[in-house]
Length: 365
Image (cartoon, rainbow, N blue to C red; front, side, top):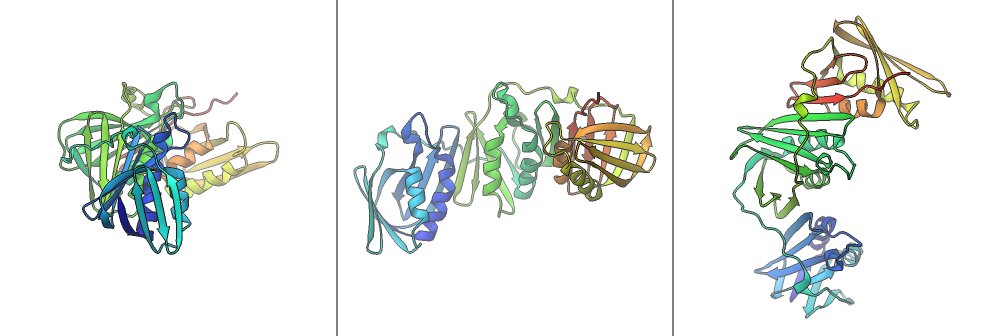
């Protein structure tokens, strides 16, 4: 293999795919990045067997070929170059990277030991606007669990039904549900996507507009974004019947300005953010919400105007959970629905892609 490539293009491509070349793998070859030179293009690909990343960039290919480079070493070295023209030559598993009069010689991995990169059917299972997909990821992944004992809760449930997708995540203390429109949809189905994979997709979508295609096949999800392809292994198992968790009736419904409520919760949470429970108490009476936090240092009282339908209520929440929900809502107003001082509460915003956030209150002694 022999080629020349622009340093900026190479650095960007390496930065993207190196996210999948995990360090300290049981199989050391999984720490590598595969370079494939063919037809005027250099394709970089990496995997940790759970996620797969592939990015293609233009290059002046003198001789086609393929080599596996040590991922972390190669990435660190490329980042420190002056981004001028770079030449890469490989004979067998020996690689030489040259820039100007400087050269770096190193040994690659055995090509035959590297796993095949997943390539799915390019026919999309559904299409969705980039902005909508980013919104789904931001609103749901905050509620995904970190508990290894329940793998299904480490992911986000996607329910594809007609022209709508419903995404749900929960961790035993809170739940998020988002509904968005889709196009080019196929059959009705349910999948569970690891939350860490969705966060990687969100990074790739940061500057994207328009629709993206999502492909499903053989227990994998794949998205293509420009010259980058990302695939993730799905989580197997049965998700919790979340419909049984969401309250059907309420005793108090409060409409409040999102920004004012969020900032009040944020300020009240400053006092207790280092506490284990991180507790704030809401006292809802007539046309206002009083937000209190207290500890041995002092006490914070915040007052926010609101509209109440139903009975007065005093209820306590984890301040972080409450703030996480509010900061992910774009609507001017939200509805806080209560079912009792010790029962789940919901925050909803129907104009924000039908977003619903459920949070369990903290029992006061």
